[in-house]
Amino acid sequence: MKILYIVNEPWFFLSHRLPIALAAKEQGYTVQVATRDGKAVTEITDMGFIHHKIPLSRSGSSLFSEAMSVLAIWKLLTQVKPDVLHLVTIKPVVYGGIAARFTPVKKVVAAVSGLGTLFLAEGVKAQLKRKLGTWLYRFALRSKKTTVIFQNPDDKQMFIDLKAVKPEQTVLIRGSGIDLSAFSFFPENLTSKPVVTFAARLLFDKGLTEYIEAIKLLNNKEIVASYQIVGDLDPGNLTSAKNTDTEYWQSIPNLTVMGYQKDMAAVFRDSNLVVLPSYREGLPKVLIEAAACGRAVVTTDVPGCRDAIEANETGLLVAVKSPNELADAIEKLVTETALRVRMGTAGRQLAERAFSIEQVVDQHLSIYQQ
Image (cartoon, rainbow, N blue to C red; front, side, top):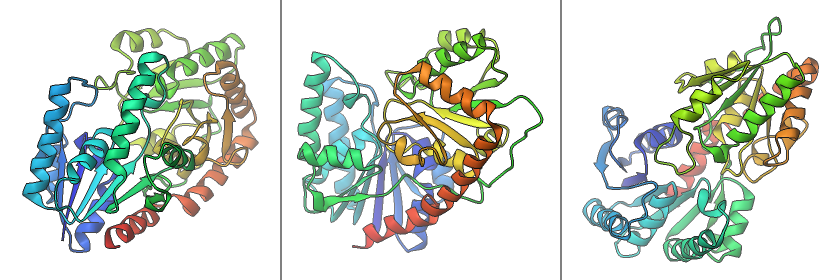
């Protein structure tokens, strides 16, 4: 049995699908991975997976280059002839789903891990793009051989309402899972200034503007805390921050821009509170990693984010695009130590109950074996 994963970026495969692929390999599948080129390709091949480089532009809109991407995927499918095709991230889901219609692939698994800027942007041009995107999703996904995985019920219902999928095609799996031993519970340091951490790719859709404005409000109120931004720029994304933005942030009092950090468990161990004021998510891994480490969180009351926490139990929800509410929530958990610690403990319990990697792997293997 052959399984082929198609993912935009090699690093995303490693960070979000590696445990599932390793489990499939242990089950006897021949695992192959197709991504665009990147530094992480070597790591994929070192693990014994067969890798294929395919042309995928994450933000490109050239009709010719996008058509070439679909053609390249179609050629790969006719060459590999996978028994299971697992598509992850937006373009692989759409282009792979379309290509699979014209090949003898037996089973297609499409993971919709977020709706991207297509469903966030505003204006006439954005509306036209959404209409086109909706039609493409319908053509790619409405097939008897396709199972579509959603990470939160809002995204699932939206796709059903748009008639992009049929209800019987859908499965809800809450996130990509986490290794609870790697992200272990660690008591907070309560003897020094509280550390508040924003951890994500540096995209403005993640709520960076609101986080910066909240820090300014808290500085003006002389709240005693240190603030961090952890994450890397993502030039392939249209909403990515730029070097000029990070240079400006470094001038803000009490704020440190740390850049990319490989050991996120260590980052959370050194933090007291984790913040993600995103505009919309599939189900943000950073929130469940933080919870697993025993950290309270503040996030927005939007699809995906609200599904990663238990409101007022493991963290606080605030209105999207509201720096004032965000600042108030941060202040509450920075100043009310007992409440914050209690929420962090409850977060660990939630992670153990709902987000272990073992549960997510078993759910995926069950879908493969149908």
